[in-house]
Each structure stands twice: as structure tokens, then as C-alpha cells.
Image (cartoon, rainbow, N blue to C red; front, side, top):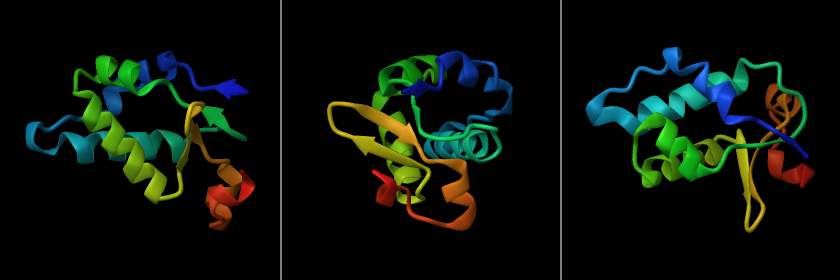
Length: 102
């Protein structure tokens, strides 16, 4: 299984503009931008939520909520005891639901 390394997000931190009262919205938008504008093909395992929270200097709950919002948009899917995966870029483009491929 391919994995998106934490370093991928770390080198794109300059694109994240955290506003104190809108951290969840800022992080969700940043994730969405990186996932939809990347050349990632296929399913990729996202970094652990705790690692992302540490990188972004926010609480774990903020990252969990951002991941949930991205699941609602069809960009991520979570599998219990396995992890969170990005959806395939071609499925996002044609509007197919990611869950149908799992």
C-alpha cells in the first residue's frame, strides 16, 4: 500500500494560513487543496492523525474533524484498525463515490 509521507505535507506548510478562530476550516481547505491538486494516483494511506496534529501544532480533535469533513466530501475514507486513505484522483474527477471501490 502506498503511503503519503508526512514530509509531503511538511514541505507544503507554506500554503497553510491558520487563522486562530478558523483552524478547522483552514486545515480542511489546505488538505483539500493538496489532495485535489496533486499528481497522486490510486489509494494512499494518509499520515496518522496524531502526527498531523503535531506537525500543524493543533489538537488531535481538530485533525480528526478535518479528516471527517474530507470523508464527507469523498476525498478520504477511513477503515477501522487500518487507517485513513485518500481516494483515487480519477474517481474524484468523474464524481464517483470512493467507498464503492472498497
